[in-house]
Image (cartoon, rainbow, N blue to C red):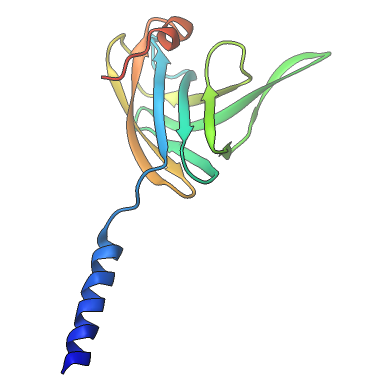
Length: 154
């Protein structure tokens, strides 16, 4: 009988561990989008990532505000510049920023379905390889550079 009771105790302990969600190792900040008056065009978005755990990868972003969200890298050469889609975004332990201006990475909302008004929050779902799906809200700012510099978590 003691063996049976011990088995039940161990099972309950393991069940409790399995039902506890894993701690998030990814913190996301500086989530900004510049204001745009018309729907339909591409719109850049930016964010900062603090990874306190093992290396991870951002696999994609979903937003009801656009057909898709891509990760673009600006490539400059003798003929000018072009954008390449470069998913996934590798997030080593530590800080990674996708910020304006000067860094060649940005998120691009493709075929937006509405304007973006200063001060509103735009919900998005970020899908990570290890950290799972994290829901966040991007803040619409007057312009990207000032929005990044003045970003405050609300």
